[in-house]
Image (cartoon, rainbow, N blue to C red; front, top):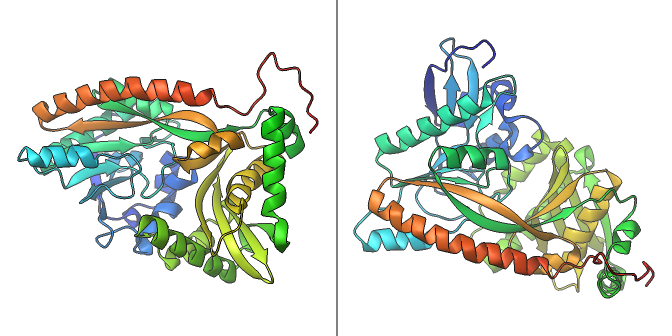
Length: 393
């Protein structure tokens, strides 16, 4: 802490606007846009988060005796397990078959956003290990007093994961697919790092994506106008209706996102015959580009790969970003240069008997996941150390 004082209280908020943006962001930092006050407020003010969607805000803050905010966490009461991307439906069913009540539960997360990042938000000038421990202990106590079945922290970064494990929470291993920038100067440099067959495949996919008069444009900041958000929202809704069945984000969310965080938004739109036919929304962090949503009206061969993966890589190279995180799931991403990367979640369960069963499940699941990640890495498209082929082709 700045002056060595002990944190006095942990307090729960029913809305993010109960705390001033500068106080929250002093804890959240600026590297990860999803834990920013502006992003969380856009979710709440647009009614994308709230009673309608089963994500009820209960954010927590740690304050010293003078009311100064030292740490915070985005916390929600959940009445289901949707929109989390760490699947515990089986746990819920098992607990309820045994006579328990799994919902409501508490969730430390960014709603609908499977992006690893900080979850225990602590001011950089504070005693971070001490405050992380206090924040975890406070949230567990809130869960106990509320009588909920469990507390879950999804997609914490490595520092928070270690703190959560040290505090006794059970860890769950997951996997995503991330692209790493090896100081490439151009997209061609990246292609040169690939095995010949994969390089040719990628070039063919890019050519076919542009066939038939499809063109792509990258819009950022104030260049993204309301008509662009309107077009993208139509893509988002179409994809949600066809694939997921329940799109959570409202049109007002995208309006608020563009108004409050224009400098973080990177929108890639595909145009054909004078109209937009597809789009991919990314948010830019301190050293990463985060792919978030995609949609397309119609069938266009390889356009998904081009808009979501290749354009993102190209953007990251041009802007000297360290990586691209393309979201949850999708083993097909490996062949496009996005390699398997471990992710984590942490879990506290009130019922000791049920907690023991979950702990045993997680032990067995982790062994299987570690084996799967190692196996997936063997499908890397990159040239191996002994590969003497040229970068031509």
